[in-house]
Image (cartoon, rainbow, N blue to C red; front, side):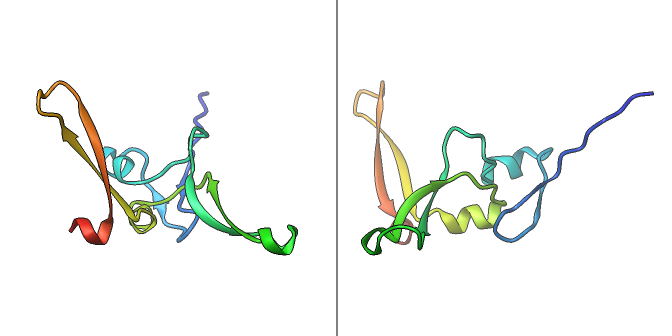
Length: 97
């Protein structure tokens, strides 16, 4: 007898099931891998009054729709004149469109 474990990922924001078998879905969503996280504004009442709200990294799983809403900064890769390297230019997403 063989046994197979099925792991189902759900979006931590909206609860949608994330299809990890679909390459297009995986490119457009955020599945926490422990290496990085999404920037979130954290409110923690246990800190002193002046440190209650701050920006933190959160390791959360996001579906493509929620991941799109979470990204506010647009990065464009711009090749240098010689074409051998590149640099990044950052703008707010509303400005890039």
